[in-house]
Image: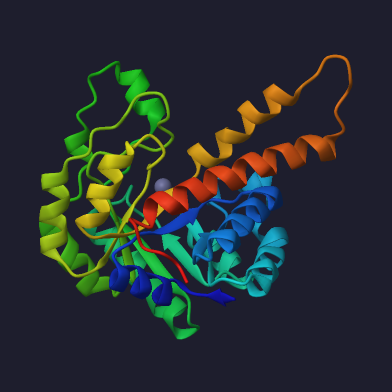
Length: 286
Ligand SMILES: [Zn+2]
């Protein structure tokens, strides 16, 4: 069943878990995640990120993913991750997306809020939900290049800006920065739980975590307890395919591509199930 973000967030808030938002740039990834969600009977978020469009153009794959979501036995939100241009966001909406992230966090607070407000006005008129981002999300390249000198606190979301942003824009969910890093797998990010509590206190808005792949399970559970209702995952699930493929490679017999694809899909499905289980925070999906 294809839905927007609203009902998923409401159910997550009511039952104190976080809904998993998987980036699914390819149809294989998409199928693996949908199978995982169906086996767990859990609602789920799938969709392209603007950054990966070359691997699965949103105009071409959007309608296919929307159809897959419609046919799924669980509620599925087709959500664009990090839409950084109005053109691209419009392409996603036209392709059947039911939710978009309008990420203009590289602009000033005022500009970011103004553009997201415009997106919300249009998207809400056609039943599409919108996620914004206040603060900035660092990525693993920035961390590595800085060789230990990157002050993550400089990226943190300012609690005073949250309520103002929601008031101006009317966004349905908000990504907040409190220590996570995009693409982190080797080193473990250290989350600032006190900061998350301040952010939670500042607004009732649905809070979203990005860059969850390297976060320790105990930290994740703690963060969900403090009120996160959506957690984005990509690196952990996608890179799980590599290990499985490498183990299956046999120099004696060439592998067909469809065999490699099946191996990758099975590994990604198991990884997605593990993620859904962790984010369920003990809640049993019925
Ligand atoms: Zn992200």
